[in-house]
Image (cartoon, rainbow, N blue to C red; front, side):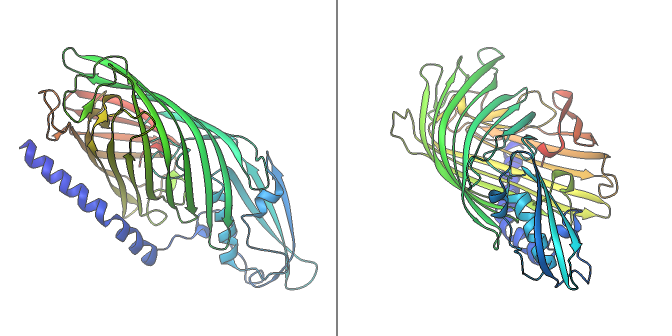
Length: 446
């Protein structure tokens, strides 16, 4: 029965992952999302549409440079004003600015007929919650549950280069990262930005072992990386780079397999090449439902190539998809993710499947999960709503040599109800281990 469920679940996840780009393309054609209906940029009146821009002024709050802000704008003095250009400039500031910019545009009559004056009011935000764990603005977010914050420094040059840091805290892991980001190319007409990111990171994780005794085994990892990011205002992002990772366990994980490298005996070290493609909904997490958001996905491939003192070589393949359907004023969501590895991976860097009804994740060389949610009357109630959900997750250890970590996927289902109040979400899930209450920020789920 477990093998049948494993194959069925793996097949379903594979189908969703394969179809995600096609679904995203279809939604872009059939149901385009325009930022003008998100209470963001102003809607131009017939008199303002086509008018000549007589003057553009700026009112800036926070640590911002005017020359940096102007890099994202297509509307210049003397051009004719169109709604598409207003939407584009607003989206450029909001999306390409890594959510640090909170823009507002005021359109006023000009000194003569058929002219207008534009007045931008822009506030920079130095402190942000990590609202998008899987999709937007990597690597300025963390793919774990919990509560965290991003701290942004002021721009250092005309390119808008800046230092930033983030932390993510939860019962399962604690992460921190310090980054330098340089947006070296911005094309406001196409809504694209290319950036170079150099950072150092560290984290603490926990793995629940059952053999020889049931204990928590803590692990630590640290490293440095250099990444290239290419982002678009529609939520598309490409990332690629090189990183060096050091990792160790405080004790034996209890996992025995030719595919596992024990880092309690000696620290693990890997030199990794990484490449990824993602599509994020270009709206805040509180609007992750149709028509504002239809699909999100992320695919990441990592190859630990050896060299520079590497202790093992391995590959990892990660896919994550969330699909949204409108059911009247409610929303039905399916979320699937899967991770596969090859080679010999450190046991302090195993992959974990997480479900809300269990206090610890289920970890191994490979993992996968599937969640279905029904968000009741979501389009009408913004500050308080109910969610019904059912989820299932599994892990395995390739070439496993012990009975507590099997070589085939073992599933762990649960179901429950959630309550969302403003940005706080509280869930009660019941599974094989009984009931469990969890909480998180709203945007830290899919």
